[in-house]
Length: 248
Image (cartoon, rainbow, N blue to C red; front, side, top):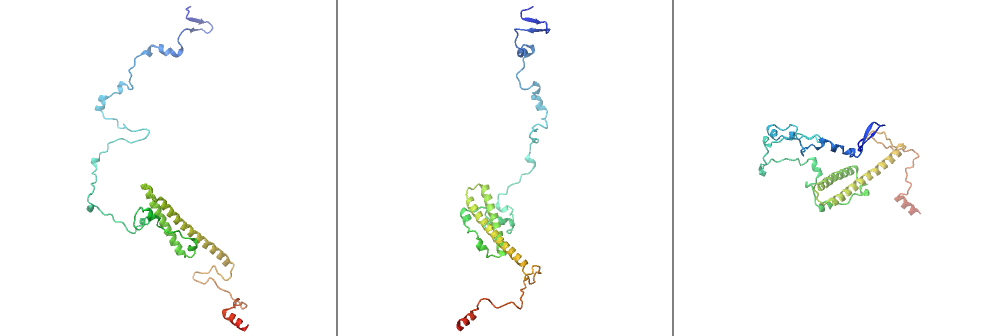
C-alpha cells in the first residue's frame, strides 16, 4: 500500500490524504490553463466591413425601457420656413374688441402691472353701519364691483409671480384683504335683513290683518276697526295741552 493512500474496507472507497483541498480542484484541470484572448466582444461581432456595405438595423436606437421612437433625421428643407416681416408698416394689425370681457381682468389703463404706489392708493373697506342704509340694488352692485376688483388683483399677483418681480406682493395682499372685508360686511348686512324678514313673517302669520296669500299688486295689509275702537290718541295733543294749562 502506498503511504499516501489508505483503503477503508467498510466504506469501499479510497480516501486520499496529503492532497490539495477540493475547492482547488478546478486549478488542476488541464482545460483551465487554456489561453483566451482578453476581449469584451467576440471577433464575429467585429463587422467593420459589413457596416459600410449594409444599412443599420431599422430598430436601432429604440429603447425598450423608455419606449422612445426611431431616431430618424428631420429635414427642414422639405417645408418652407416663414420669413419674418421686419417692416412694421407691412405687418398685419390684429383688431381687438374694446368691450371684450377679458378686459375686466385689467384696469382702465390696460396695464398688467402697477407700481406699489398705485396699488396702495385705495380707501378703507365699507363698514356694516354704512351698508345698512343701502338698498338691495346698491349692495348687489357693490358685491360685483368687489368681485371684479379681486379678479384684477389675482391677475396682477400671478403676473408678479410669473415675472418674479420681487415687489408689489405686500400691497396686493393688503388691498385684497380690504376687498374681502367689504364682502364680509355685505354678507353681514344681508344676514341681518334676512333675520328681520323671518321675524316679521312669523308675526304676520298670526296677525289677522295681514294676508300672506295676497296676489301681487293687491293690498296685503287690511286694518280692522270696530265700533268700540278708541281712535283718540292716548297722549295729549299740543293744542289740548295748552287749553288744559289755560283752564287750570
